Image 1 (cartoon, rainbow, N blue to C red):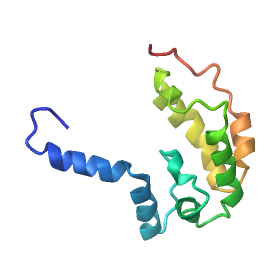
Image 2 (image 1 turned 90 degrees about the horizontal axis):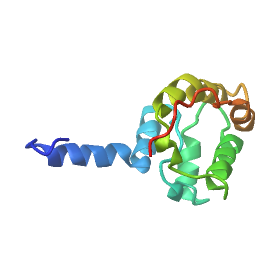
Image 3 (image 1 turned 135 degrees about the horizontal axis):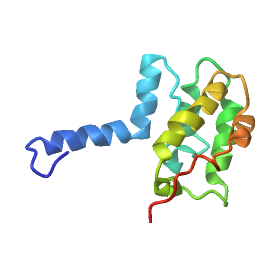
Length: 130
């Protein structure tokens, strides 16, 4: 989107649709693929329909326990949501370290707890934005 673009409304409408986690869940269900991602908002962890839909996108494994582990981590008092945006090279860390670790979770090779406990990002962080 650009301040000078004539089609900003359409671009913004697409952005809103694309970043809505409910739409992501429905697209995954419609396509028969696992979502492979964590919810962007805590409202998905409602213990009801939203959470059940998220868990149901993992069709190749029983993801109930795995999703419960992620939910507990994201809702823990010690978790600071959104703080990762201050890490300068966060996208690189995600692509090179976190995604490969989570791939093993989605494939059912390790538990979410095992994968996350095995992550050591101390040498990966390239500083913080202020």
